Image 1: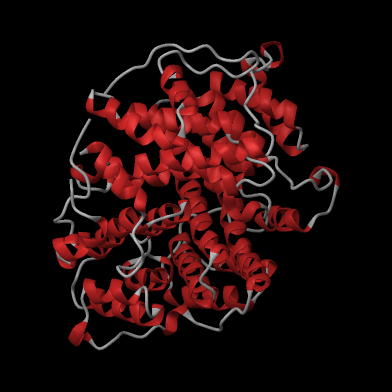
Image 2: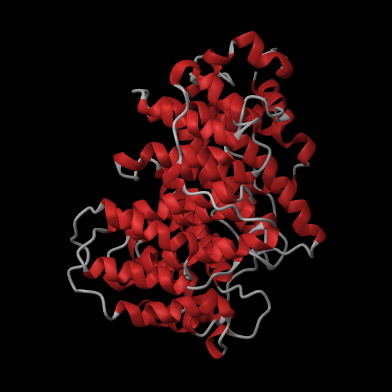
Amino acid sequence: MSINRRRFLTTSGTSAFLSGGVPLLPGLRTISASDTALSDGVVQLRPEIEPLVKLIEDTDRSRLIEEMARRIRDGLSYREVLAALFLAGVRNVQPRPSVGFKFHAVLVVHSAHLASLASPDEDRWLPLLWALDEFKSSQARDVEEGNWTMSRIRESGIPAPERVRDSFHQAMLNWQEDEADLSAAGVARHLSPDETLELFATYAARDFRSIGHKPIFLANAWRTLQTIGWEHSEPVLRSLAYAMLNHNGEPNPARSDLAADRSWRRNQDLIQGVRPDWAAGREDHGAVQDLIAVLHAGSAEDAAKTVVNQLNSGVSTTSIYDALHLASGELLMRQSGIVSLHAATSTNAIRFLFDNIRTPATRLSLLLQNASFLPQFREAMRGRGAVAASRVMQLSAADPANVSLDSIFANVGKSRQQAGSEVLTYLNSGNTAESLINAARRLVFLKGNDSHDYKFSSAVLEDCLKVSEPYRSIFLAASSWMLQGTTFPENALVNRIRAALG
């Protein structure tokens, strides 16, 4: 395509662009690469994917997009690129000192994949090739910080199949990194994907560190493996265990009373008082608003106790999660920024785990931890400036006379409050959430410059379908505080990808 990126919207017509009528990329498509030797001590990936991973690792950032585009034109498949990108990140980027920052190159892969899945065929390569460039940026930062690379596993230390679960639990409870590494390899070799999710979910949200990236990593890694194949799971699970045991250089949490761990310990006691049939309950709109009010100003302990009381009074987890999603949206309104964004993306991840595991105690623990996290996010926001008193349930609709997709996304860059009000009007006037979602996603493709743009938009656009119908428009309106707008500058990388694939 030869359209100049500065003229793209005007030459194509904004409405046609937002509705998906203008392709960002031509459709393409599959290949393999030749073997390349690895340094001694570096973890070896499966032979069918190792050459492509090595190509991604070794190709200079300035040439990688064009090299991958050439191979795509020759037949390299989407699934091969997705797998190689994810594994390159896992092998080369250390989830320390925090499960974030440079590690977003790994965390964003599933979000980019979700964006690709929901795209028109013509646009499907764009998020994935953007994520390849993001990996090269993170790889360079990792080199500056010491050039960490995942090592080979010590085969003799991997627990026997009958001991894998106990070994994993013991290592995680005691925050023992070496033992957890060996146990994670054993989990990959001996347990099913569902069993793996159950095990890791027990510990994914137990501590409020790395602003929610631990459950985000688990949810996204498990889903990515479901796409690329569980034959690639061992290095991924090793990275995941290592990330989940990060405690910011503090004393061992198993032998300490640190603030980040207190909610989990309290909530383990609270769980014991929940009625046995808590999973069956009624939807309760009053309970939704009551919980939002507690999350607006109450403590982490207040939030967890309110959830327990609501469960014991027969309120459904659907209503409780409606409140959690809306409260995370309210935090975006109160302070639009990196902390409130992670309140939304961590709620997305924990909700995914809650919906996809079967152990009642673990599900309850996740639910209470999610409720406890939101007040902790709110308090963390205070270190970044003023936290407004905005109330998500007080959002009001705009005058419907001039509301359209064009006006909504123009106002995203001018007045978030106006954009949110117009979202309410647009959806309450009979327009579909899907049309709004598609427009928002395409703007992320064209304007997004950061992994958070993909992570946030994918989380929100997934969660809006889980929020009950009466609250869906409010949830999307609050989310507009962090979406991309048509007045934002375009990402120069988009033009480069378009040229490489054209």
